[in-house]
Amino acid sequence: QVQLVQSGAEVKKPGASVKVSCKASGYTFTSYDINWVRQATGQGLEWMGWMNPNSGNTGYAQKFQGRVTMTRNTSISTAYMELSSLRSEDTAVYYCARGLVPYYYYMDVWGKGTTVTVSS
Amino acid sequence: SSELTQDPAVSVALGQTVRITCQGDSLRSYYASWYQQKPGQAPVLVIYGKNNRPSGIPDRFSGSSSGNTASLTITGAQAEDEADYYCNSRDSSGPRGVFGGGTKLTVL
Figure 1: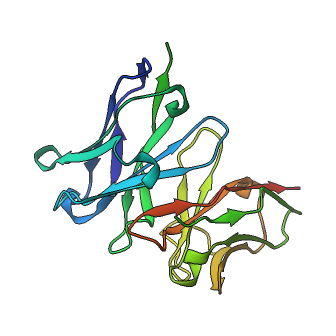
Figure 2: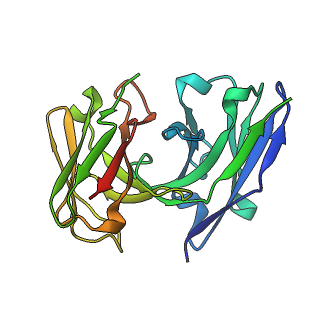
């Protein structure tokens, strides 16, 4: 079945970076975009950006420009989201989600989420 | 960047019909998608585009759009429909996505 499996929980200190992985299975990885969405505890969903796994093209929310990098390794059908200069406000659950073609922002398959905690 | 505005909370009696709305300038150009999220779970896509339901989504869920407002309608709400609902769409200022703030649906 189609699924996205994310890496495990992370605890980071302020100023550090975190890299979350998202492994796709059950479909052709390069045929669908990947979005990254985060959710702080008790808060709403926040769209961070998208990546086209075929071309490597990306688009980031203005809020994260300069701090986020989305990459992929097509040989292992895995997408990555790296967030740098972490601060306490970045503590959240981070989701990857598959985007429907051609509308990447319609997200039909979601990973279970990766909890990132930023604390000194 | 665009913003999408949702009512924070809505309630409906069991078996009745409820409409959850989402407003934003980008909705004049792009259709919304809608997500259901239950506590401790990842969101689930329930409606996308003009009015499309992914496989497995009950047909009591439907979508519509007019002007700058998108709506998710649940006809005959069930207890299991109690959840947070989020709209999202494309940002009208560029190739970026944007979510509404979410609506907490209570089924009475």
